[in-house]
Amino acid sequence: MEDQKLSDIAYSIRKSCHDSGYSEIFPPAYVKSDRIGGFRFIFRNDVYVLEPDITLRLMNNRFPGNSRVYYISRQADEFLGESLKAGLEIIGAVPGEANIEILKMAIKILDDLGIRDYNIDISITDVFDPYRKKKDGDIILNAVKNRNYPQLQNMDIDGMDKLFQIMDTRTRNSGIPELDSILEEINDPRVIIDLGTVRQPEYYRGLIFEIYGRHEFLGGGGNYVIKRMNGCGFSLDLQALSKLYGDVQR
Image (tube, rainbow, N blue to C red; front, side):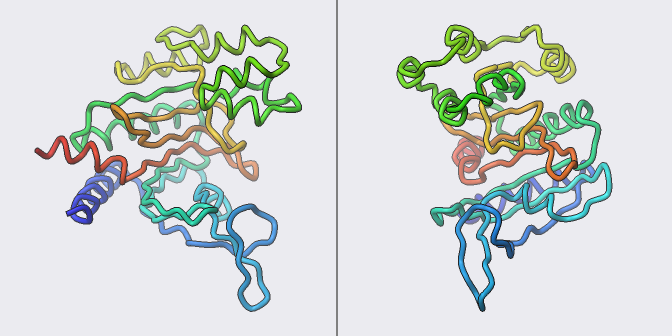
């Protein structure tokens, strides 16, 4: 039953992407490298990495400018935990235009699945730049991501009040032109500005967003720059989608 549900979800996502002009690609399960992080193993004296980050794998390939691709792939993290993910990437496009398109594609995929009870929280990496550059920047951002107020209060952080203000800002009018213009263009009440949104890894620069169901984290993405190539994309967790997809099929 679960396999059939995942198959139906994958079929719907493929149709949504194909109808919108995206080409399917098939990322490798591992890469040969001794320089990148992840679960490493040695085979015939060479080091391989079971790499959890598909975006990095894609950017190791050569794509022509303004490429639109998608994938459905089983991923394993550094702890060998598995998940079935679907992702879209616009590679080499103008960031502002790509932002609107990629958010509209996220909405289209979910709506085509019949899933409508969700929210997309958007933010921009710039708001945390002053904190990212601090000595404990990674610890600060991780605490912000987890909304760990007690941990932050116990840290010596310049601008603590400003940091808490950012974390508590959910609005439809942020005063940040890039974000406000996105809301105006998308014009969907399920898209909201949440400046406390944090995404890792570090290659995100510009728009970032996360997608939530009623109780589930469904996925997220944003703008990135890798090897001087601009991109914008997101991934969705099919197992999380299946919990909501089951509801709409009853």
